[in-house]
Amino acid sequence: MIKVLGILWNSFKMALQELKVNKLRTFLSLFGITIGIFCIIGVLATIDSLKTKISSDLSGMGNNTIFIDKWDYSGGPEYPWWKFVKRPSMKVAEMEMIQKKSSLASNIAFFVSTSASFSYEENQLKGVNLYGVTKDFNSIQTFNIGTGRYFNENDFIRGVPYCVIGNKIAEELFVKPEKALGKTISYGGRRLLVIGIIEKQGSSMLGGFDYDKTTIVPYNYYASIFNPDNNNPYIMVQAKPGIPSKALQEELIGVMRQLRKLSPTQEDNFTCNDVAQFKDQIESVFGAINQGGWAIAGLSLLVGAFGVANIMFVTVRERTSQIGLKKAIGAKSSTILYEFLLESAFLCIIGGLVGLFLVWLLTVALGAVLPFPIFIAPSIVVLALSICIVLGVISGIIPASIAAKMNPVEAIRTK
Image 1 (spheres, rainbow, N blue to C red):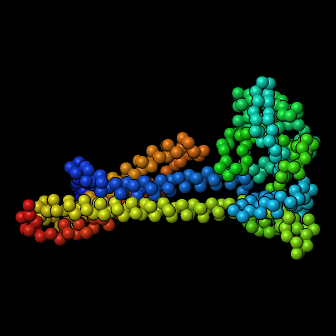
Image 2 (cartoon, one colour):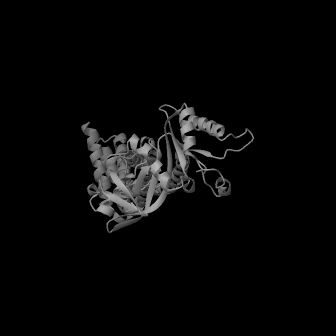
Image 3 (cartoon, helix red, strand yellow):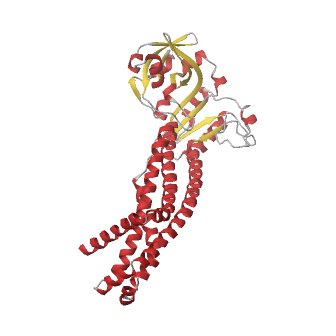
C-alpha cells in the first residue's frame, strides 16, 4: 500500500513539475482536453437542468393526464388550424358525462381562461390570467395555497365571487402578500373577494399555467360573466393510479365519440392530448443535442489525447537517463510503466478540472439570465474525471511502455 501511494505521489509531482517547467507547451497540449470536457459537461449539465425544469413543468400540467380539447397540441409546420378552429368547444355537460362513463379516470376538471386587468385602490396589474375551474382542478394541478384557503364544494356549486390569486398579483397589488386576504380586488367593474394566495411557483417553459400571475375563480361564477365557448375551454382527465395514460386516452376517445354521436366513418371533432407525448418529444430532442455535444467533445478530446501523448513522448526522452538510473538501482519495469501512466492520467485530470471550472463559471452566468438554475450533478463530475483517466491511460500507454522496456545501461549513457 505504501509503495502504491509512493508511485501515486511521484507521478503527481512529475505532472506538476511538467506544468511548472513547460507551461506553454503543457497548456497547449491540455487545451484540447479542457475544451472537450467543457463541451460535453457543459452540454450534459445544461440538458440535465433543462430536463429537470421541463419535467417539473410537465408535472405542473398534471401527471398521467389527458387534455380533451378541440385543438391538437402536436403542432408542426403543416398544422391544419383551419380544421380545428371549426370544431365545437368542450361543454361542462360533456365533462359530467365523462365522470359517469369513464372507469379509468380519477379526477376530471373543466377549465377555461381569459385575460383581465386587476386593481386594488390605486394599484393596477394588466395581463392577469383569469381561470374558471371546477372542483377537481387542484387535485390534477400541482400548486399549493400559501396563505388562506382554496374553494370548498359549496363555493363551486354557488359560483361565489371569491378568488385565489397568484403570488405576483398579491405583491403587485398589496406589496405584502399576506395583506391581500379578505380584501376585494376589481376587474372590469366587477369585484372578487380574495380567500387564498398561491405559493410562488416560477415561470413555466412550456407556456402552461402561470400561477404567479393568475386569478382562479369557480367555473359557475366565470360562466355567469363570460361565454366559455369564446375562450377555448377544455376538459382535464387524470388517470387512476396504475392506469397508463395511453389506456385512458383510448377510453376517452370512445366516450367522446359516443357523446357526440359520431358514426364510424366520421373523423373525431376533438383531440385527446396526452401530456406524456410531450415528454417523449422532448427526450428525442435532448437525445439529438446530446449526440451533437458528444461529437464536438469527441473531436476536442481526440486532439487533446494526441497532445498529452506528445508531452509523454518528450518527457520520456528528457528523462531517459533518470529512467536508466532507477532501473539500475532496482526499479521494476512495471513501476516505471505505472509512474508514466499515472503522470499522463494526472495531466488529463488537470486539464479536465480546468474544463469543469469553466463549466461552473458558465452555470453561474447562465443561471443569472435563464428562468431555471443550471447545476452540475455529481454523476457528471465523476463522468468527466473518468473520461480524463481513460484518456490519460490511452495517451500514455505507448510512451510508458517505451520507458518500461529501456535498457538501464543504454539509458544511463543517453544525454
